[in-house]
Each structure stands twice: as structure tokens, then as C-alpha cells.
Image 1 (tube, rainbow, N blue to C red):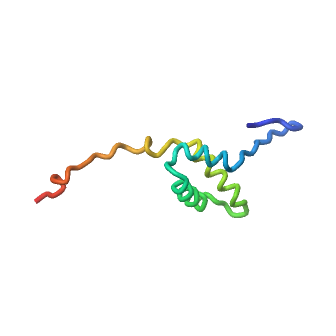
Image 2: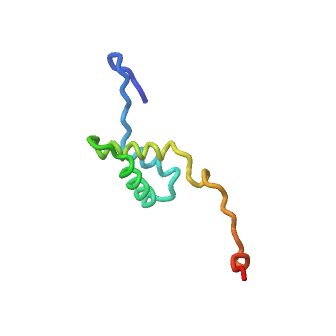
Image 3: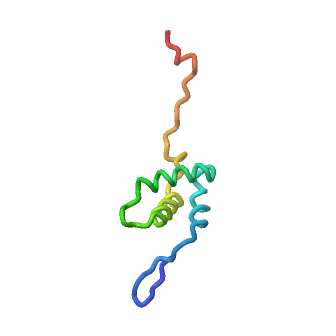
Length: 86
């Protein structure tokens, strides 16, 4: 949420728990969320910035992103008999 203070727009900060609950809408459980968030934080972290801010940004991106299950193409099941060619 944005609000103006003396002509300057300041973004209201969300609590990390709100970011976690928002990110859990697209991830199965908290363990998987922790694993994905730690990998993404390591890749997106910029020197001379706070690690906490990068983590919050990652959780915010998870909250706003498209679930991975919907983005993937359907996998074709191959019968075991067909895989054993000769």
C-alpha cells in the first residue's frame, strides 16, 4: 500500500509472516517454501544490501507468481511396456 508523506511516496512494509502466508498459496508446505526461498535468495541477493530485504522480496515474488503446477506442460505418461523396446 502506498501513501504520501510530504509529497514522497513510501511503500508500507508487510510483516514477514504475512509474506509467508501469501507465498504458501502456491507452495505445498513450509519446508518446500523454505528450500525454494533460500535458493532464490542466494541467486537474487545483491552485495551491499540486507539479506532480510532480499528474503522479503523473494517471498513477495512467490506470493504474486503463477503456481508452478499451472505453468508446466502436461507430462505424457509412457506405458512401461512401450519403454522396453526389444
